[in-house]
Image (cartoon, rainbow, N blue to C red; front, side, top):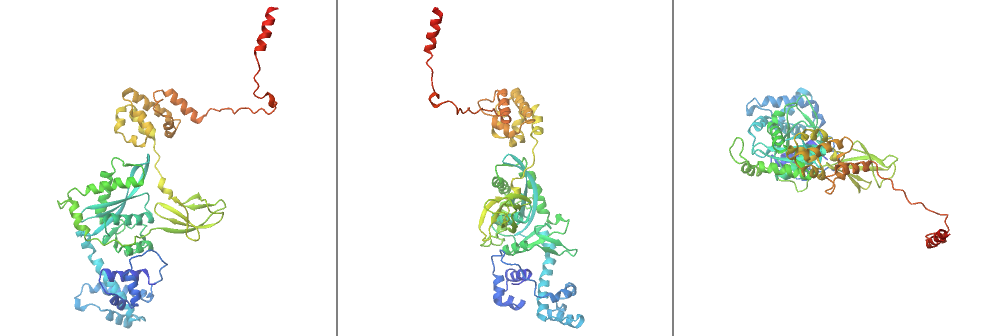
Length: 497
């Protein structure tokens, strides 16, 4: 197997330079079957660990060759180094012991990279169609009656000002790559080039010379979808200013007031609808409908691969003596496994599959962060409404109240509503809102004393004595009913005397 950089270069020669299999094989000095394997590959899901590069002998001479190539860019075309001339100089001046084929491969690769780097400033300014910028932004929402913080991964297209959003709980690698995959599907294609921050889900490290070491997972993902990733300089987010502005625009216009949804899927639909409606306005600079510009830009996108990329992380863990495993930094009890048994954890963006040694799914858990919420102080939210009860109908606090509690407050007006808000505030000092909700019914809402008694009974349930079992009474007397008329006769006899 070739190194990842060689695979990437073969794909680059095939898709961008439009070279044939024979040309690639001759240029790189590889077998034509190997060249065809990587040039026409459409499924880049993980198979095995990549091997090391085949040309380590060039490492000591890369800086010298790069210097000559950079100097050539200031000279006339006919007075620039050829690959053979560079090889001859390395041999005569530097004592190079490698082959001329190694030098030709490296020079061709570096010339292409330098040409891309040279055109980057122009591309960034002109925003040609089919290119995009990506970034994360945070926002708050109400999900299932709880206040949550969610992330929006935005893919924006500067040419048309179109934007697509994926809502996710976190910014980890699984959420990031799954988000990009779904954003490509929303767009109906893949941008030719995408600008990113130096986010940890894609960049392992960034050197002082601007070169970045990318995660293997991100490189594999980029090869699978055939886009060119570019990264801003550290601390220079303005270099992708379009998506930076789009994050702020989405937060101000689509997340105010707080979006209210039952679950993450519904929240995603709400944001998607907002983004779709936004396409119907005029472009801020071109005076043309963004929808029309997007229809033009869509034709420049790369086709989606036939096989979608599966983003997951596999981890081997050993259960403790109680059949528990460490999952997302939390100890979780897992049914169906024995003490000290080794299992596999398959982390997706929203769930974790527990696998046995045969890679069969035993059970599935949601990721630990799916249900995380922000604590809400209902007393602080309700307190101002006690003096202005009419404002309740327009307050965001309604999104955090259960249905019966909401109806209990909104079914009356004026002083009655004020009194009920005060009663809820007083009860919240002792009870949870879920307990108050449980005691509210349409029949007893007008009697707060009855409600308080019901709440008291939740914490102090009435003890019902079980009947005593009599094991000593003879069976002939069990259920015996005496004839009391005989006692009446005795009483009448005594009175006569």
